[in-house]
Length: 224
Image 1 (spheres, rainbow, N blue to C red):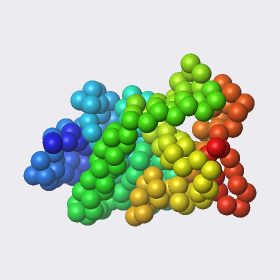
Image 2 (cartoon, rainbow, N blue to C red):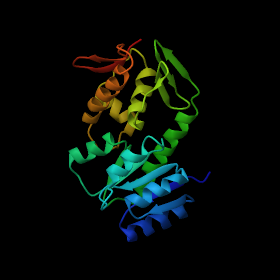
Image 3 (cartoon, one colour):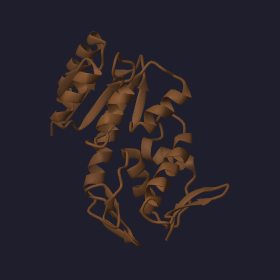
């Protein structure tokens, strides 16, 4: 199977190098040199996106925010920034992972493969969960409260999926972060606290019932 890879970076030399490398790996590669071009190219329906953060006019974070409700594929940020808050902002904007420049092509390739395999596992699940007014369609990756669909980022949905498929079990934020982003992911589990707060607020718009419980000093669990 040939996966479709969209690479967005204003460094044209890096863009060409990545294009050549991944075409050798038998990916179908689409490139974009800026945020505006990326917003147009998203129509190609990629399987995974490599997205540079530091671009003029429309940066990678803004591109991610604009497209995240339209696509569910993994987004890996390419960034020269090493500050923790920059990494947190990337995940909160809807990204799934990031890799710091300069990076190893071997490591980047491994991360892409890991994300694509995770996506295939998710697609193979045809489970549907009903709990009170809440319904989760694991195949379509949709969550509804009554007739209201929740607008979730990819990581928000995956937190709901992970916790709801393990009801009653307590997971600390580090365990949740590692489960969603991988053991070798660079980043802060602090983002999980903010994502769960957002999930709760989105559910609370339609029902007072709480589904994600805080177990003080231990972590979070999905209410049975």
